[in-house]
Image 1 (cartoon, rainbow, N blue to C red):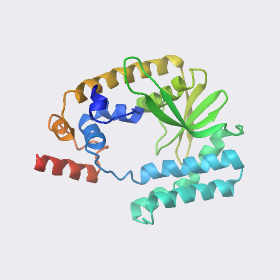
Image 2: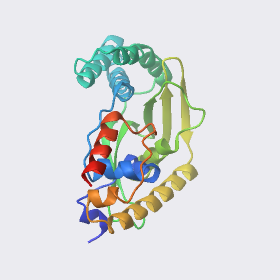
Image 3: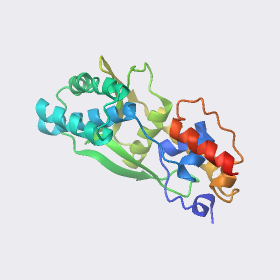
Image 4: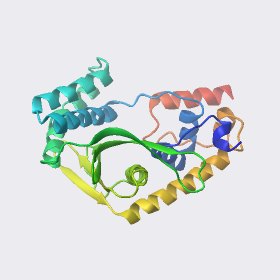
Length: 248
């Protein structure tokens, strides 16, 4: 029995591997101890803009795109009208406008939110992901952000590498970053994605070895330090960590 099987893990994802690499204690909390977290408005706006852009590409109707974005936002916020949430909500319409302008006259996608699966060398579980938008010769992932980066984020490259490998290394892959003011398209080179795949394989193997040596989540979290000042640590996660430390 390998370490993944020992803890009931049946598949991996780029985000899970990225979390293990950058914040092992938080990985243990989320994936072994099942801590719950509130994604928050900065994640919700991404869902809303993605829904709006997808509706636009299939219907070419701005009203329908806006309605789709608003419906997804309401679904995520569940009636929360706090000041922070409303401030983010105000960015939805302009960000959606930027995204629509960025895709230009692209043809109707052949797939949206399609599940993909691939395998890495020396890793006994598949990597699973979901593409944002696909065409016969291209995959595009939308990233909604307050500030558009000049270079793609490494974790985003890892996501695209999984899609690229799953689709047979044949499609061109691009990251579309959109803020409420501007956009940028980063087309990824095969060498960059090969490097990302190799890095994820190494990370997955270290995770499997760690998991093979711990009994359960409580045993694992007791072995790891946690820097809760990092941006990934929300109040619910810090509370869960403190409760675990107290119970130990």
